[in-house]
Length: 138
Image (cartoon, rainbow, N blue to C red):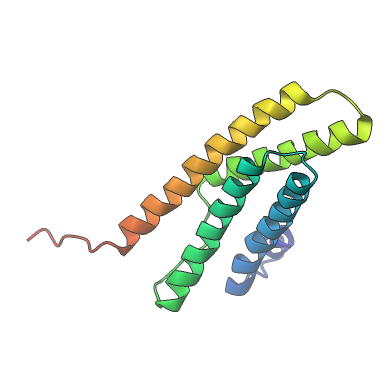
């Protein structure tokens, strides 16, 4: 786990890539599963999966072109992940407790969709800046 690697000074470049990838695979699996059983709207599942494919695809593209790529999430991405987890917990909690959490779930759906779009756009802008030649100022 990333936390343990950092705690004991055992971080590796491979681990820095695999840890967030494993987190994303888990969250995507949860979102797809909840979408299949009609507990999350299909459009949200497509949005979340598309953003994650964009990020993984960008990383693979950078690697394939031998472009220096550092896996470092931006704050909006971290917020998005927290909101995705809260949404999954709220949906599963509502199912498990047979409670009425629809207002909370609805609010989280819109927050997740908003942060997903902003996060995806942020990565596109950051990668675009990184790949663009920097004027020399001559």
